[in-house]
Length: 242
Image (cartoon, rainbow, N blue to C red; front, side, top):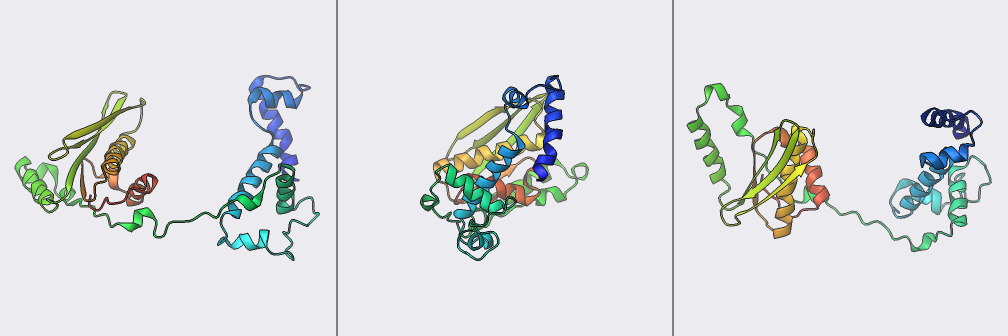
């Protein structure tokens, strides 16, 4: 098997890392390093795959593995190299009951597509050196006025030398704020996203339906898919306008 061919490389790496002698028992090195052998790692990944596949009946591989008795990948196969057959053998030896595994229900549409999110970056179209502060303020209040029926949330991240922190502030009717200190040397982009996350968590906690999040940088919402990932992770419903 391929894994057996890789075993000597894995063992040599462990011996180099621990300055072990050539004749040192490999099981002792596994125990000292706190990591499994390649064989056991393969078994764990295989079991994870089969168990996850069991919960996904709509997956194209599901019927082949669990319902097609004539398949070459059937659990009745005696081939030593048969991935599925070996996995079922380990499941049997581990006394895992496949019948109690429930199907995974995927939400449709996904949370980040359930509500339309509007991103307005029109302020970035003006050049700072050619635009006065008064002009920026007028344009900002014009944009903010378009969402006058929304709760406003200001989010930002700051970095002083190697120290970084993020914050979210809800003025006007809510008048509350959230802040957190991040580990040193975190990038500015990451701390800006953390500020947005703080705002989204507060939005979820207060069950707000219409929100306008105001950012100090356009980088935090570009690319757009990263912003959707933040919302999907928090499973927020109701964040409609940003």
